[in-house]
Length: 349
Image 1 (cartoon, rainbow, N blue to C red):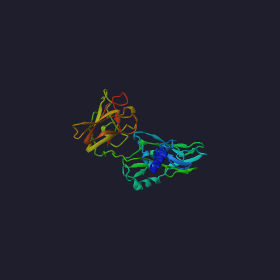
Image 2: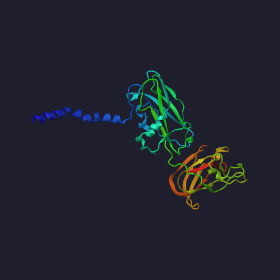
Image 3: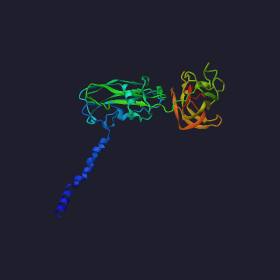
């Protein structure tokens, strides 16, 4: 009886403390879920996306997926910001003096990444190639974290319309290569910008031919230009142009039908506007894509509005269309009031 009373008194005395224990124990676990760079004062890290809130900063192999390039290959430029940050015990740390930083591309990390078996579960299971220099530029490679500040930003400019990802994906490891003060983090000093190989590269057009077109300009555009066949000849300097050098030019819609020479599953189309002068506004705007397995019976595969740009535009179908040998591009408008249109190259994938 005495033992029971003592037990009750002990429980009564310590019960408030025991009730608090779950909260005390949970807090460290919640904190660890925040991906915060840790380290002593003056730990230097590279971050993308850029920022000055420690628990949003990321770089290194643990954050490889964060640096996936997801811009449109129709874009001429895409500028991304990265930052070099000074961190102390998981929070931004102001520099006591100027810290000079240099960044650069560490090409050795491409082979290191490709050779690591732990990365074989990557999206494509194919090795990356080092990104060619015409695809990007580092606007500045040196900068300073000024005394009293905790970061400096750098610009990386990409040129998406120059990318050819039909054969391989590309990796661009941008690293801190020198820092005048502080302790450089070995885990968070590199941003692995990357883009995967195109899973649907353009079809080979060697066996393609023009089945028919509504009209073509065989006089006004000069020798070698204006014919429908020009839009599948692999020469970006030639183009198909609808007829205009007559008293009453044919009006929209204009159309061209292509025989691919073999049955394909259609995933999308690409269009390169006329490249050598002329009125840029005459290029395709609103189009409809039709597909056929016999050249006689047709079904709609897609409908698109193109952008008013001079680079190649890639358009993905909402749903793949299997078993098709022929396709038709119906052009309903251009970016001007003229009743004609033109295009340098048409691709399908």
